[in-house]
Image (cartoon, rainbow, N blue to C red):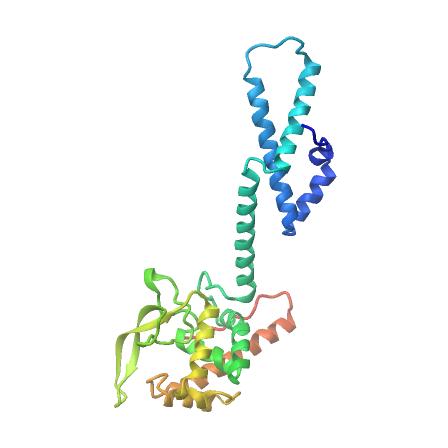
Length: 298
């Protein structure tokens, strides 16, 4: 080849390889490309070596020294090929590595922000409150309703996270607020048995369609949108810490048919505050201890 040879540091400088490794972990696109080219050059070198090893016997002038020079020359060829258009292997590796890193980053972001559906229901009421807290605080700022009130409603609707409606195939619906799927709903639909009350206050267990979501965050976002855009629930907005006002506005709008919905909601919100207070007190007394577990009927 007429071009200048590639320096041996490209493939033999271990400090350089360590630096390249760190850059790849930092998601440096140039480092990912360099790593892919390194792999392609090694693969090409191995392929050339296998081809030369497959020859029958030795030629005139062959010796250990000539074999060494031949191997060094093959390494140069491999490196030059990988730095140019190459065999296409480096391009494939770059695409695969980029996709994998993007998928991992997305997964980690969901875990940090709480946007993914939990793998299992919370084991305690304190766990449920901790999981709901960042979601409820964001929704609270949008609705003008206390975060404790929203956590309490989610706890009331799902039995503290133990009884969410099921999506198709038995997966979680990520529907924490018991939002039903009406005729205008265009998303996923699941079903669950729920207790409904008629005009005379008589209870009956019936199967109802519920909305299903791709994530818990998506479900909370839809709940916020429902309250903001529906004139039926307009009086629930901006009620702050007034659980009675919030619950009464929802009941008048037809959110729930239970005649005791407001009373039950207020009781659960009080329990939310009690559980949090108990957990915080325990943490202050013994910072290394596990959070206090509240028990009771769900």
